[in-house]
Image (tube, rainbow, N blue to C red; front, top):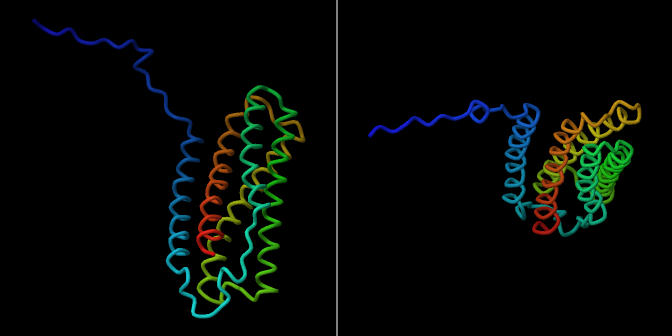
Length: 198
């Protein structure tokens, strides 16, 4: 008794390649996650090993308001993409601009904190190991927020000029993946620097 070959209809056998932009973004996120892991491990490793002050508990405040702003931006960008998929361009643009504003608020908070630490507390990147690892880790995150803010602002500009339509929803969704990553990284940085590290 011979087994009959299994015939798969051509429509089911065809395999579609995944979206290149999405694959590229996930690849970037994977590489960036590895980079952040190195910086977080270094921060934890050198925690408490500074021979001179100031120490984290002496100078760091907990940036609760600015953290809420950044984490809220994940909700606004998600809602913006969903609005664009439903062809509600006006709501999309409002939420997208709000996301950029929340990002800007977070960056202002970061730079205000650095200004206080440098000019009032005397903590620079050269002061001690804490200063070196703190500015390296938080600065790396601030760089990524800045890159995201530039991308958000660019899309906002295109939207204000009337160049964003429903068919662009997939593209802005790919960009939103990066922004969700930046927010997720901040949760880790916040816990390591401002909770565990203090």
